[in-house]
Length: 358
Image (cartoon, rainbow, N blue to C red):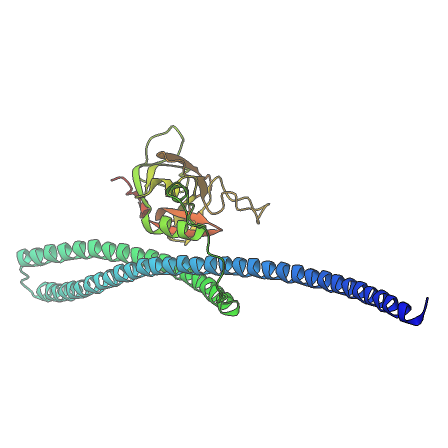
């Protein structure tokens, strides 16, 4: 075979080899590109999911912040009412003190006049008797007014203790608010366009479950307590008490919870507690066990789950009661936080006298 015939064949073989090499190179390049593209898609998917999760967390923090702020507003309203009541009681004490001072001046003047009349050689016994009777009458009024002033002072002290407790709750809530605001500021919601979820149908909308924070807000704002019957006894089957002593043990509470959306409070937890106003402390349910100081069983009251029916609670405590003034208090209980309910606080005992249900 001469050179002219071999040259086209050589060129054809070289071209085929080059084409094969190019094909192999392009196949490897395409494979690399496909792998990189797959990695990039996976990273984007993970980034999008992370952003979505971060947005959900941020939204939950915002809703939790709203709940705490609503609770602070509610407690501030309670504190405002307490301050107003304390101010009125102080005004009453000042008025009573002023009246007592005026009566004391009258007694002093009558006493002076009685002594003057008695010092005369011919004392007017009838006049002296009249003045002494008037003085005794004023002294009796003063005793009654002094007892009233003492009672008012005690009531003011009880309200101050309650005010201190509520102020402490506000402080705790504000600390939680500061923590949440710091977390939100540290991890702000990502500003990105995420996938739009598919439109929901009417049936799907019927089955929407609102977030726990929105549910909490609804419960705290819209739930009230309706007490039907309150009875205090020394013995479970004994007589209803009109006056309590240190050995009072049993408290029976019949009540219901009311909400414009009854399903909102179904299966939710609530807390009922007996509260010693004089000593600003909870009277434990079934007694607090000092051998297990970390246990919350009964120490803060009785926690129950609402099932949509009126409730009858038997609250037992055999410890000697130190105070003479007691409340019953009802709260919504969530995540170790107690949220006061409307009409949820009723005074049971005032100066040893049972006043609930009277």
